Figure 1: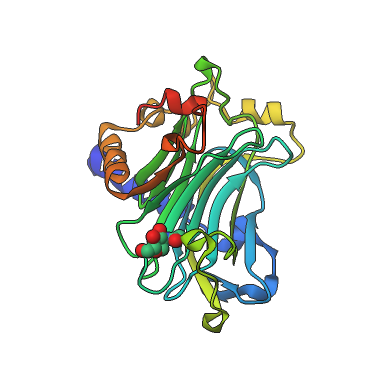
Figure 2: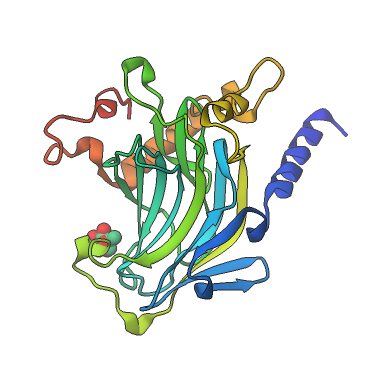
Length: 288
Ligand SMILES: *[C@@H]1O[C@H](CO)[C@@H](O)[C@H](O)[C@H]1NC(C)=O
C-alpha cells in the first residue's frame, strides 16, 4: 500500500475508532426519564414537565469534541438545545453552541458564546446554510493553547484567538466537561421571547447519533496545573492539537469562515456599539 493511501485510510480508521457510543463518554445529568435510547441513537425530550441534559464522565484539556445532532423538527419555537464545554466554579470557562428553535418553516439560529474567567457576553448568532432539523450534522469545539474553533460540518463558524500577548485573558488553565441539553427558554429564545413554546406540539426532541472526544483526559484527582502540564506537548510527547497545522486556520478554513460571516452571520457582539460603549478588548484586535 502506498504511503499516502495508508495515511488516508489510517486517518479514516482512527476517525471511526474514536466515534464512541453514548455511554462510553457520557451519562444523563438530569431527567433520566426524558432520554430515549434507540440503538446508537439517543434522543432528549422536552415537554411541559422537563427538559433533559447529559454530561461527559470525564473532564478534558485541549482537543476536540464533536456530536452529530438533528434538531427539533417542525415547531421548535421557545426551545433551546445546547452543546458546550465548561469548567466549574465562579471563574469558569465555557464554550457554547446554543440552537434557538423557531416556528415551523422559520430558520433555527445558532448562537455561540464564550465565558472566560466567569464572564460571558460574547454572543454571535448565525443562520445555517441547511435545515438542521432534516438530517444529522456535526457540531464541534476544538480547543488548544492558540485558539478555540467552533465548527459546523467541519466548516469553522467562529474562532477565538489567544491574544494573551496583548494582556487579554485566554481560557486554557481549566479542565472542561462536555455537555448537551434541551430546555424551555421561551422568555428569550425565539424572536427575542415574543414567540412562546406551543406545548400542544410537545414533546420536542433533539436526536444525537455519534459522539467523539479526541482530547486529553484530566482525572479529578490531579491538580489543575499538573493537568495543564500533562496535556501540553513536551520533549517526549507530541499531542495532535499542538501541531503547527492546527495552531491557526488553514487558508481554506479562513475562506470558509469569511463566507460564513459574510453570508450567514446575523449578530456579532463585536459590532454591537449600542451594547458596548467601550468595545471588548478582543474585538479591537480581531482580524475578522
Ligand atoms: C426565527 O425566524 C424569524 C423570522 O424569519 C427570524 O427573524 C429569527 O431570527 C429566527 N430565529 C429566532 C431564534 O428567532
